[in-house]
Image 1: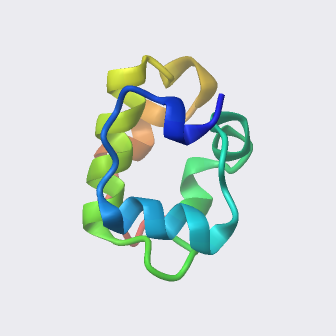
Image 2: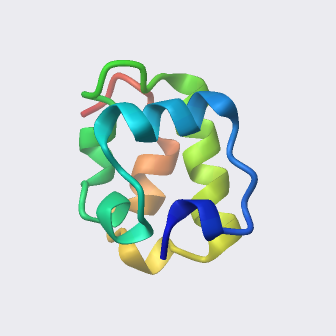
Image 3: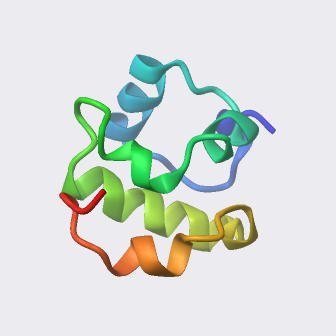
Length: 78
């Protein structure tokens, strides 16, 4: 599913991040381990908070085995 068709309203910051890394679908996003997201330039605390909200709002926790642990870890924890 294209990210633009999700019911979640992404911020301009998050949309710019997706464009920067070349992600346009939920499948492409799910293919990247959550722990790897913080390695991308521009993915900081606000992006992580928004990503957590998105995953929970869209019910995508099952796509990420490490979601519960990643959600509570700090932004610098890889």
